[in-house]
Image (cartoon, rainbow, N blue to C red):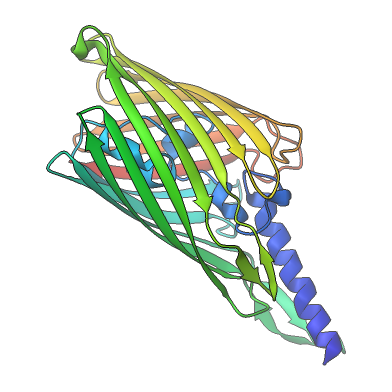
Length: 324
């Protein structure tokens, strides 16, 4: 019986290590490493920049206050990634999110994320197979925001998280986020706008896993973007995001990206992320493209240039959204 306990514990550690390797951050993050994965392909194509860009259906996971600073009243979207070349669904994030602005002053956001690991075979003390186990983690996410004086927006988010590593009782917890954003415009408002935002993400009570308590991977994000319209059909946007993981240990990353919208329907983008030496993901680049068709948009991103053995290297993200 004791041997079986050791085997289950080893399987659980393997599952946790697998998920940590797929995270955008290093395995030093502790619990819930999937929180570092990109959600929508638009930000993924900007190498993690763009948290303050407007009309983002995944604003709940970047800067929730930016859902109130865009031009569209509501939106809903689906996202998935990172997909490797073999297109195996193990350790791939799947989710949906959206927002709805009420009267132009109040905003409601909601979303769901899920990630599952590969099947792990279990054996008894004689080495005979006794079945398989699989990790599964998910969050249910809600947010509320308010717009002040047409330019300032604040938001608070709450996330219920469930973590089942497949070898012990599932862990349940809650975490929160605080967000603020400011939108400005150029002298001629029709030529574009700029915005800045600050977010404190994923903080809350420690999560109990296998009898031990672990701190949540609390992060601080400062973002800014500039959106310049050259004509009705052409638009250029640039974004810079600075991220610092405050616990369990400090990890810093800076992401810079730009996207160009041409003929009102096509989008191309690229970005680069510079990480601190402590970050296991290393520096990397990303490119992406998208199509705008009426109220719908489809986006694709490809990440490359990271560490040779980093499983996030040469992976893709996909997302689709409808904006109203």
